[in-house]
Length: 190
Image 1 (tube, helix red, strand yellow):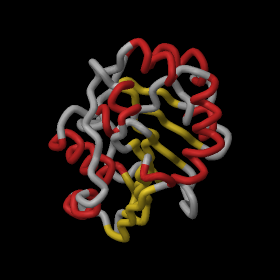
Image 2 (cartoon, helix red, strand yellow):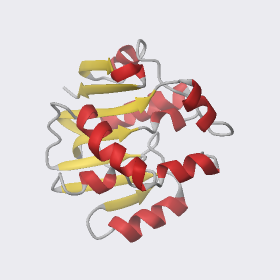
Image 3 (cartoon, helix red, strand yellow):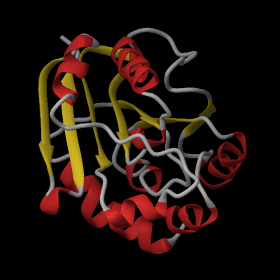
Image 4 (tube, helix red, strand yellow):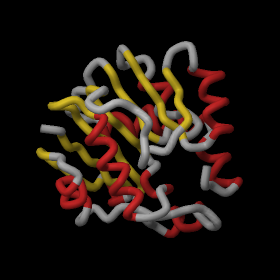
């Protein structure tokens, strides 16, 4: 996982898990119908996973870091399918999921081209009518300091609709949250 030690401590903390449960997920998923079979990309230490696992009938999590996969399997493996893999090159069948979600992880994808491949892969594994939704952080002084030595490639909200449309999505919606610290997006596979 491309994070420095301070960032790892924050993302694995109970405080971050509460922030995710009480603020990030309710805002990012406002009005989103996830359906019966959800894929979370880049669950990290599982702050989102621990909320989603109680909200959807079937949950799959795809994590790129093998050590983190082992932790997630230990903590959630009896309630979710946890896979090791790259969201920009998924080894999952076409049209498999009712929804694909990702939260506060896109800025850890090193290049815009890799992010675009992730968007294309999310489109590919969604069923027709399925939704791709999530959120990510936006740059600030605190955000930049937290990412010293980390991968930090935040998405630009103004460019995100065109990038999602280029991946094949329709009904694209992108908005900034309070104080413009976060961006959320929703898009549909026709």
